[in-house]
Amino acid sequence: MTTVTTTTFDTLLACLFPLAICIAAYRLRDSLGSFSDLRALVFPTKSSSQPYFSLERAYHSYRQYERLSKSEVSRMRASYSKLGRAHKRMANTLGYTKKLDRLWDITALNGTIADEIAEIAEREYPSVTDTPKYHATSADLARVREALKHFIRDWSDDGAKERHTIFSPILDCLKTVDPELRASQKVLVPGCGLGRLSWEISQLGDHLI
Image 1 (cartoon, rainbow, N blue to C red):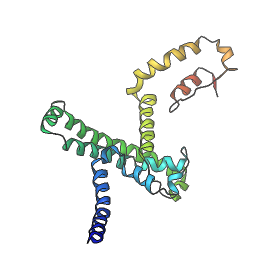
Image 2 (cartoon, rainbow, N blue to C red; image 1 turned 30 degrees about the vertical axis):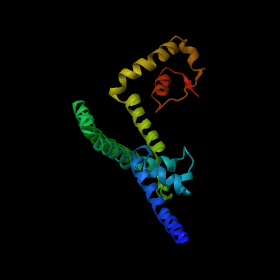
Image 3 (cartoon, helix red, strand yellow; image 1 turned 180 degrees about the vertical axis):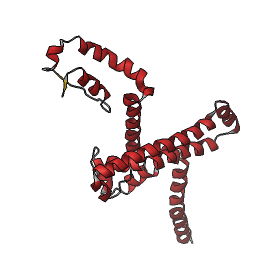
Image 4 (cartoon, one colour; image 1 turned 180 degrees about the horizontal axis):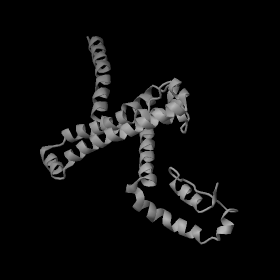
């Protein structure tokens, strides 16, 4: 009788243990990252091992930007829905739900831009469409967002104030150099974003490294 009871208990425990893991994973899903992150961790594939700075990885990251970003917003909304009444009232007072709605709309707009960038890559490098689909992760999403921010800072009217603050001291210093000497000088611009500072320096007559 004891053996039967022990066997039954072991069987029950074996059945409940996976269920407990699933419940814990569901409750912690907002802090575990995206599904792509978990899939790449649990089921690594050949595509997930693409070089970090490869064209193919960048292309697929831009293609998946909108889906991954909206997935993040959905997780934010899910987290909000689990708040208590008092915290929800506080969030509503701060306009949190409206911010989430605006974030959703902006994500859709950015997604259009990201898709257009990917289409340019398809025209310039047709081979990228022949590569196995890469499942972008939150790290890839962060890099796409960083690039979009650089577009704003480097080349838009909205970024003019920031450019003036950051670039002006550098350009003013280079302007003190005799124009006749600039042609023989080379300027190193590390971490130059999308090249606006490099372009500004080149307009002074300096050569870039």
